[in-house]
Image 1 (cartoon, rainbow, N blue to C red):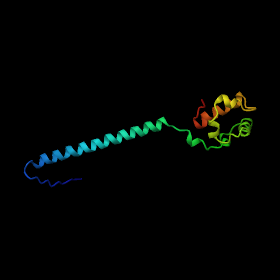
Image 2 (image 1 turned 135 degrees about the vertical axis):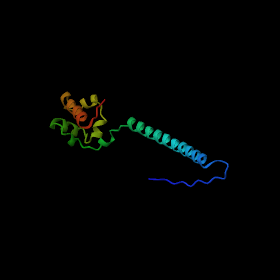
Image 3 (image 1 turned 90 degrees about the vertical axis):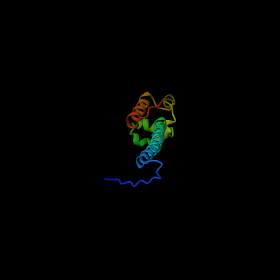
Image 4 (image 1 turned 180 degrees about the vertical axis):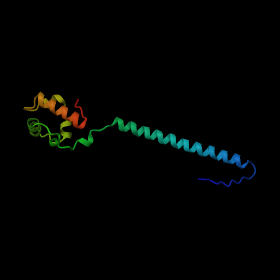
Amino acid sequence: ERLFLDIWTNGSISPNEALESASMIIIDLFTVLIKNTIRNEADQLEQQSDSISIEPYTNIAIEELQLSVRAYNCLKKAQINTVGDLLQYSPEKLQELKNFGRKSADEVFSTLKNKLGIILT
């Protein structure tokens, strides 16, 4: 590919100097744009990493977790129907549910961690 430039000056500077000056101005302008774009992208990545959200999982029905019948029934009786409902409970509060013991809690915690990467705290 080729680029042909026809440079006219009024004689105060040579065509080579005009080209050099124009090139430096363009480089400076694009450098500012690139730095600004990089900074904006870095800010966006930082915001995304800060807010790695569990929101996409909130509407998943607990049936899809494929829990044991006992754990599933306990959650249903407590009107916990989605992962979003489940995430509103702390591990201690989950164990307070009727007939929901340590074994059921461990199963729910491990399923959330293994299938969705969510760790209840």
